[in-house]
Structure formats: structure tokens, C-alpha cells
Image (cartoon, rainbow, N blue to C red; front, side, top):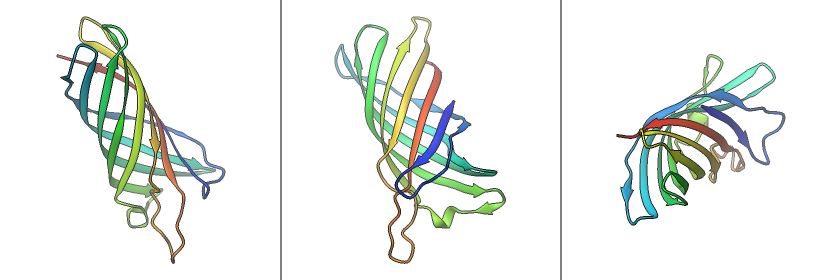
Length: 154
């Protein structure tokens, strides 16, 4: 589940939307306590303002460093590159008005059961503006996404 919004100095009177994300990952153990986890994730993001809902769909590629505090509990952090798949505001296509890529940093935690079932919470902090510069003026509009996940590892 996603709780997505956009933030920045050029953003006013918006509220978050609830959407979804899904994907896959691989985990590569580097030591007993550290691992690297690349992912491929579809993420529905955006915001709403009054009766208007901005729907942004991304293909995100996070690469997370994971530190295991215990056998089952981990902390994770790392960069994420997102590719804009679509941008809609009602029936209007806004993809040409937004940057095709988004760079963010992910912070999170996870808990893995012995059965393979896992749970995670993550915050994706937008680092790059998603709005294209308009008539020489730069915009400060960034993604801000809280993600809650359920996963199965085999």
C-alpha cells in the first residue's frame, strides 16, 4: 500500500492519496549482518487537490543496503531511480509536463518470519523535482511516498 503525495516550495493545498505498489526483489548476503537488495517495483503515486486527482505511475528501481539488527529484523536504506510510465489528471495526459525520471532515497525497516512471509515499512524521500522547468523557471515539486508491504521470500 502507498500513501503518496507531492511536496515542495511550489506545492500548496494538496493531500495524499492511497494507492498500491507491487514488484519483486533479490537479496544478496554480503555478511552475517549486511545484504544488498535490488528491486523492480511498479508504484502508483500522486496527490489530490480539491476534486482533482493527479495519478503518477512509476517503474522504480531501488537498491537497498540492509542491516540486520537481529535474525528477523532489518533496517534498509538506499537510492531509488524511478521511470515515469504515465501521468494523468482526470482525462488529461500530463506526462510531457513532468520529468521522465525521479531520483529518491528510501529509508525503511523489515521483519521476516521463518515461513518466508515478510513485512516492511518504507519512506521514499524525493530528491529531484518531477516538474519540468517552465519558461526558464525551475519548480520544486517532489514525490513523497510511505509504503507498507507484505512479501513472500522463497
